[in-house]
Image (cartoon, rainbow, N blue to C red; front, side, top):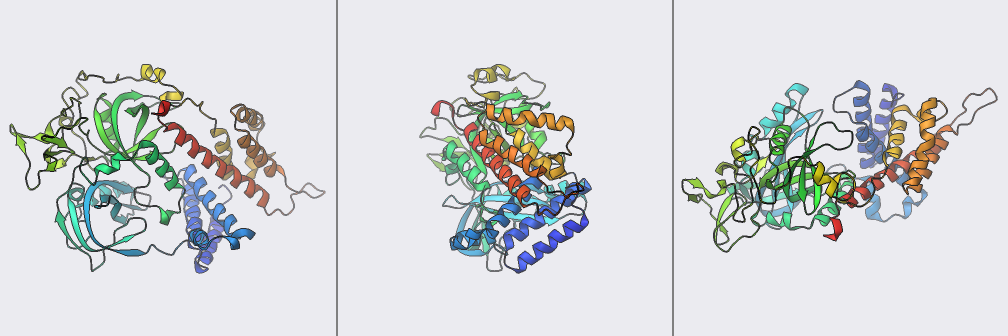
Length: 533
């Protein structure tokens, strides 16, 4: 990174342009991503993350290696087409669609801001509608994203805003949809407003009916797919959780909100850390109410323990619904049918505003206009949305079977590190990934003889730690990475002779890909229910 100045970045962009002209659209996009992240790193942009730069470089080198391999000609046409990529996503005719709003999230990047709305059709497939535009000032990016939630959804002539769409529905004719679930807004598309559905009603309820292990396997597999082949919502988890207070983990000084889900302790994190969005404030409010049962939507965070980036929350589903009138997803249901075109009122208040379900569980008490869900990035939870005793100045209400507000005792009772529910010892994967990232920032000199004496002493023990943890392959790859970094030919005067860096590149790519696969496997193990439950 330190040696990738403007000249090398321009050369990389020129190579990307040539690749695009040759029909290699996916490698071209990967090269542009590397150049963009390099520029962000060298200019000190606040959204720069070394892990993102490392991932972009790994994808580019992986694609180049696969396409330049002698075995590339023997690949199946579908596999070869996936490596080459497509110029743009194609939209296919979807006919008539009955869409039910699910939730919406703000989109905030270094160059764009807006909102992304999610919907489910009658078959249970997820689709998205975006309202994202460029921004020129980082200070106005967050307000631009929040304002986009109030703009009309670009489907037909509907006047529904994105916030309204998450709680309503649309009947669409002449719909078009891409392979990744993005809905088209062509001139032939017609859409009218229709009734929505609660999170406990079909077809939305089937999202939470998928087993936890199947959801995590789907989310992890989604991350390995090419960007334009990833189905919408493949990385989302739909869970029923019980808040369990806060706890610190590792070197993190700030406490994190914890929740219980099917025997696992899950760390709930904000989907975006920008202070101008509502994620952090909402999570701070929820942290003060252990024992609260929620139905949540989140994005899987790949880590060695269960972590979830929280996107939307709603009241918990009744544990034992009866055949009579019950509250489902914030709507009154009579005999299994939701009341539409008006809300059932009991005693001057809507039935959905009750903070205790029929099973006696404490959950959210949302107002009628929230329709049983809160978009955590666009809307703020109020103290009135929580059950009595949930405010920061009040003592938590006594809840049968509730968990303690502080988690040290709870975590000690759980098997595995940090209460993950796993019996496996936390693997020292960072010993390998740290050196991989160090090669990105400092090049081969950071790993070779030019490294400081302290760095060499530290490196000597890393292989032993990896082998002691049963990661012999990781230790071998790390040794190979260091060996390739120092293996440079020199002339009789000690000067480095020509080197194409292929051996070092291959060693770095092998170590990086191994670390990626190992992190994925550890994340899958962390989300496995304890004792096979």
